[in-house]
Amino acid sequence: MQNMPIYWKVKPLLEKHKVSNYRFWQDSGLARQTAYDIADGKHEALDTRVIDKLIPYLRELTGNPKLQIGDAVEYQKGN
Image (cartoon, rainbow, N blue to C red):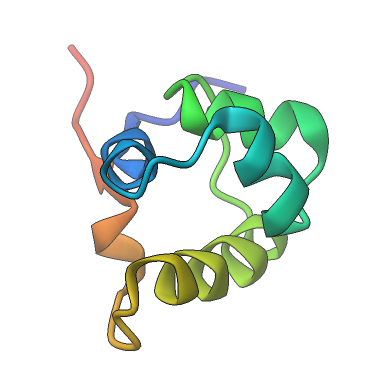
């Protein structure tokens, strides 16, 4: 399977709200490696189970109930 051409935009949100990767993992309910990979922009999959945990967490963190998947991830066509 080829890598998905996605860019995770989660790290800036975590930094803005002074949330460490560890706290993100603990509070999001995501698997440890998944949380760290997303925070570091290394997670290569876009899975609905991840989104189902990520988006509610980011909505609560940011106080933005309208936050959507596009606020957390961006499609970037590869070379």
